[in-house]
Image (cartoon, rainbow, N blue to C red; front, side):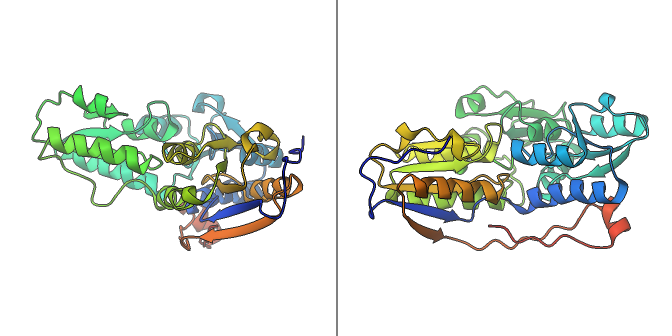
Length: 330
């Protein structure tokens, strides 16, 4: 259903389109992995969990021949399976070996970085505090690297309840798609309680998550409403909504233009639009067109930062295709 014309529409109504927005390097790589695997090997190609958290992407790959499963016991022995961008635990990798599955690992390299840090801290005898959301696929995979050494926290209150065996040997890591502000408060409290806490060599929150949140912070003084294109299970998309709401500008997460409630736009002269890191650009453009038809006739861009991040394909595909993936995102 199209967005109906907004009362009072005129030349002063406008849309501010944020950049960077949309696909990050890890998402493009993961989607490429599935598409290349289908081209090379044909269907069936199994994918454990959603390759990225966007229902349009998953549905499109399903139509192309990918078979999405929740767990590996749904995959026939010896079949080819892809691990999603969010990563998996060592237990899942072991199960894949047991079932003689041909694994193609599409885990985002920035998620792999966090896994390796968890292994390193656990081996050095540290208790690990993982900042993240309990049911998120990325967190489940990271927790599996050192389950006997890791505490999960999602708030300052969780930090206050921590009782590590040795407060002097403790380290923290974070999920890659968290709110910068919320994480900052949690880390500050960790450092208050545990002055000797070790931190990751570089920030775990990924560049795309950070850039999209900073873009939202830059636009909120200029807009009346923010629309974020992304699915409800997309952590980084939900964080963009939170950043705007916390700044006093109402924000709404939509899969596509059809989910926009006209009441959200009542009295709004300026609507800002962005997209989470797993949302396809064509959905953004369809939303822009729907807003134009509703009376938002002016379109302005707000470009905060160019992203040109390059990730190679997984080794399993590089050996076959002999080509890397070069990515430049929105």
